Length: 353
Image 1 (spheres, rainbow, N blue to C red):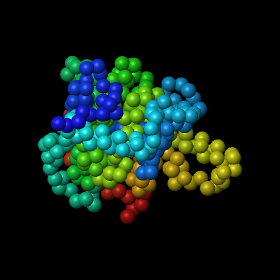
Image 2 (cartoon, rainbow, N blue to C red):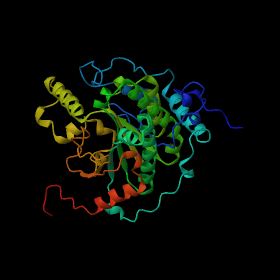
Image 3 (cartoon, rainbow, N blue to C red):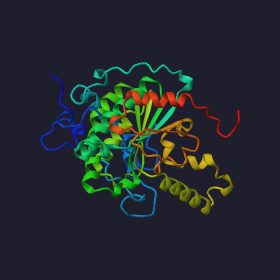
Image 4 (cartoon, helix red, strand yellow):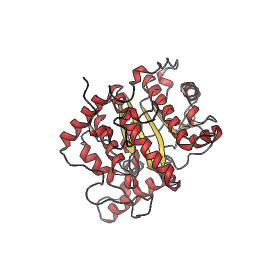
């Protein structure tokens, strides 16, 4: 008889649900949501990750602002780092047979047919169009978000199959806090349930989860689920899944600049030593290795032609691909088209060579 999933895995489920299977979230892919500082140090324990998740980097206490947290993070739970890490791995292993279906049970992703040298190493995606997709079908916005989760799962699987090294997804922007309370609460619940349900497959398929963004407004259950996923997958090397949650690029750049200015004023650094690389080390994208921080390709479904305060520093030389199809309908074939388009681009980075 298989052991029942531990309480760490069913945290945050609605009444009457004993496992993620009892929650109406379709296949889904893994989402983690970080704050504006990195949460992916390979030596970082789950407890330490929770502490850093609770830390923010701004002076304002307004909703949606980047606010410095003092003391322990609200989402932190007792227990040693070693115990927490072991518990995350154990519960994920148990869930592999008791929660969401394994990705191996999904239809196989076919070969891409594009030489690896012509593929982007890092793809960024603005997952846009869930609400309009729902409106066109006369269903609740929540249904659109849940359908969008299935699309993300597919794209994550494609990246793993086609040797894309990193995928950064814009899950929830700094400005999204202006949406209705009911929609925000549903999104946070959906993210937590998805992350918990998909963690076994992420572990099995070698996906490493990192998160970036401001966690100041996120409830402790989601913070804990994020910390568990970051810690449990930290040794995976096949694909980096970097999730931007409560993230805004302008706010990120201001925070980094303010920190460097404070250090310079205190005499800790010489202003002349502040270079592009130094500033980059203080941005939220430091969740990724330096060689992967700047996306090669940005994909935005949903018909809009703008970047919406996403990775403004990192997108300086990124190829921008816009698609009219809404995110819930964006599938393997659409992703193939985007990668084929990218493969035909000539990237000069300002030169004429």
